[in-house]
Length: 281
Ligand code: AG3
Image 1 (spheres, rainbow, N blue to C red):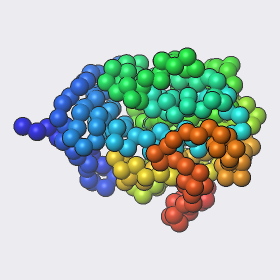
Image 2 (cartoon, rainbow, N blue to C red):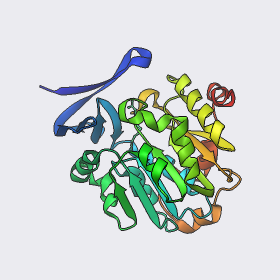
Image 3 (cartoon, rainbow, N blue to C red):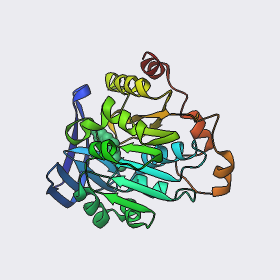
């Protein structure tokens, strides 16, 4: 008999469901329930506490957008910090940039990385790159205590529940600000504006309390709630469109499946309801 997985969407009293052909991995870490499943149409899917973290079918949208937008905004992003992102998808995109010398990944749950290394190498294999240092510890603690400084920080968190909660606080953003170089910038995955407007508004408010320049952009991610995803950028200096690094973009000659230079610009054009949400603060 076919197995189905269903993610509940309490925001709309609804759900998203798909057929699972095989459970490849299922275990409970000290932090959460972790599963990797095979599906008929979405490739392999990582589920944490019954929420879809990525599907192989469309993970490129999220990982390209969370990585390339900040990396082509900063003129010399040599040192990058990723908080969360234990699956390795964001690391994979960052290490493609020659200018990036060092990527520090701080993931609370080592089991996520181990499971993805075993079952989804297409995302995780670059965790083993020599440019990358993986620290399996709490990102909240890390940014509070580290003496390192970064050019770019990427917050690749889960939803603001359980272990993800601390990664959406003002104190956390303030500590990130402190460990950014004087021209550094941060991008935080910022959830789904159509169904979680108050959450997005809250993120905007907190980022604006700390960063002199705050910008929001969006992408289409069909397998996340509402399919309409937000990213918040807090910047000390650079403007994502005016400071777009066109020369490096051209010189790199990388291939992308979602990101390109038109998208880099266009993603900052927000629908009115979303604009009002983040401008209100
Ligand atoms: N991080 C954001 C996932 C949020 C999905 N939420 C949900 N399904 N309710 C993804 C991590 C990928 N590196």
